Image 1 (cartoon, protein in one colour):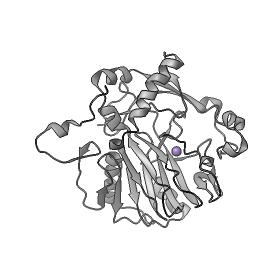
Image 2 (cartoon, rainbow, N blue to C red):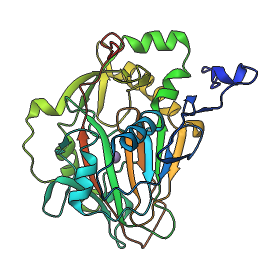
Image 3 (tube, helix red, strand yellow):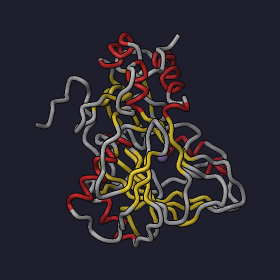
Length: 319
Ligand code: MN
């Protein structure tokens, strides 16, 4: 049996309500409405077309650190405004495989035309994290909806802190010492082998070196600000655990990937035109839900570079 998915707070008589694994913070400058008990919140009272004042920005970041997925509605931004907001989170980076948006080399798009089958966008059938094979995988993605189906086409997220925190001490100890080989080297070669109608839409050229497309990262990743641990072992681009055979690696990974599917780790966001969403790509998994047909879905995004993943033995408090 797996460890019981009960947070400690459930066993305490009465205390501060817990959301996304922690007590609900207070906010003075922005409205914050959690989407589920596990992750995600909608933020109101912010106009992202203009620079944010210091206190508002600090509250947005506080919400981001806890909820990992923050949603703003009705944000009709130019690409430059979109990029300016993204830079509050860090440096905008390119990706080797994701198709770029229009003339913007530093923006990507997720686009499925009304006549296209669901497999054309690299959204994967499974929960995943974007580009974990890079030396510094993305910190977050800032995504805005240009056009979305009337019904369906949501994006779902799974909180990897909660997945880790609900494991037994024995499993935590095993994973704390493990490292993962992630590789994006064979994305293009694999795609070439598929029949044309099954191929993903990939970026055709990039300036990343072969070495940048394969890296070893800790299976348990520590949040640089909060020190919270999270599972960072997931199936997309996974090769093996370091020192383990492929067969052993696949068996453990299948178990771990299964945990992320549990509904009590999830939130799900319904897009509307001009919805802008920021998700933490280090501590959540995500997937598009392709449950729509004969409608167009077009989302544009920036990707913000992250730190080299910190393992349990790397982390030191900032102050
Ligand atoms: Mn993705």
